[in-house]
Length: 128
Length: 128
DNA sequence: CCGGATCCTACATGATACTG
DNA sequence: CAGTATCATGTAGGATCCGG
Image 1 (spheres, protein in one colour):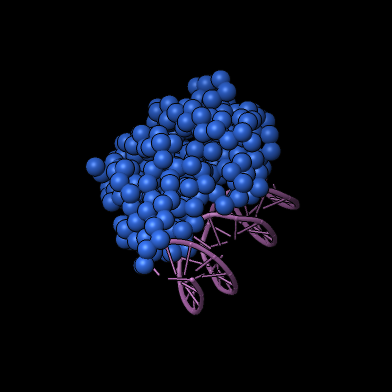
Image 2 (image 1 turned 90 degrees about the horizontal axis):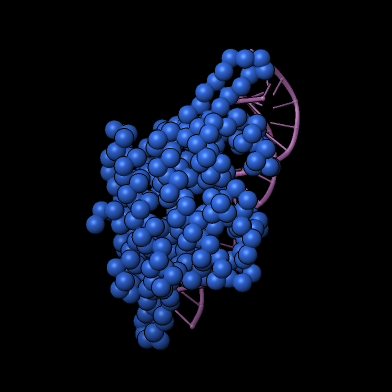
């Protein structure tokens, strides 16, 4: 979150732990990024981008910054040429993974009840 | 969801179970409504509205419809004068409550790590 | 009491071009 | 390679009025 951690995008207080949780992993990309980093190996910016497929630079940088601000990931910069930056989960970041796994399991069960919904995203933990 | 269940607001496929889960409980009001209904007693429209405090009729109706479309809640209409409508969790709806509880626990732990974030919302399961 | 129909605004997301 | 700045757009959320 580029703004103060205690406020959401609208400037309102994020007083509810449930919403705080969903705010951190929510949005279009952040849950996918967390899934990618869940292998506990450091990933380069370009590596994450490739796995996500169609994310723009802007959104990737923004999402990574929000996750870093929330204490979920660590950013390590190597002063090389060309520049190299690696991201990896913090301990707090690792702690949200089981939650994502459970959400994935629950979502799969629900989706299977709707015959028209069959495919799963490729970066989802649930596909492992 | 008033649109097809397999599409989100943007018309994109919701192929990821994690995002499907967060889509159902996400948004500004739906998690709170699920928390209110978690006592497994039927609640009237006006009752939910009072507990939420500042939700508009439009948003309340829309959120309830989305939850009903997702199979989380049941809407029962009594043809009385004045009209009475009651909502209660379905079995599928009850199954998401433990997930919300866990999100609340995780969120509480994270929020406590930020000294500036202290208060919790009143309708959150976590306060029970 | 409940909810539909409009209209409106703020902001999340995206497209593009640019720096070191 | 990584990130920033700017501008454009779709839509979630809200305000308000109306109808049964």
